[in-house]
Image (tube, rainbow, N blue to C red):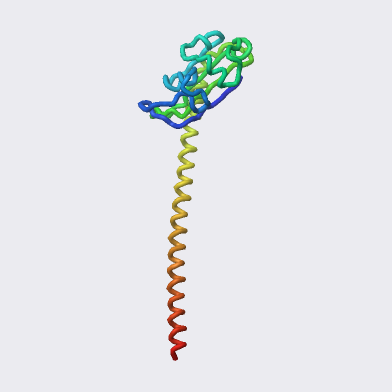
Length: 173
């Protein structure tokens, strides 16, 4: 079993999605792009993988495999689920390939994969929020330091003026 989580830029249901760009499939599409656009899981077995309308032969070459591998040689099953937030924002696609020939993915596997994908999407979004909060805190601290530095420079300049005035007065006497 091989699992991949392809997390790309978040897109809304009504927004456009550059199909599969997160893992290099480009505009050729493929099952991952199908899942991303349809926002529903996809479970395929054996020949179904290559007979699915979304499949593109060019995809194999992009992945660095032979252009037409035998199903038995590479992948026996595919299970993919969209990583969506409750508001419909697509975060990525969770993909599981059966490369060992352990049998078909079950409906339970599909439900569990979709649950995992939904939880992973929420975790990714939470991490993005934490990263944004960290960046905001850094920006705020930089502004505070800049203000403190500006104030310190004003005090220094004012002090230098006073010293200059005192020295000038002392020299005049």
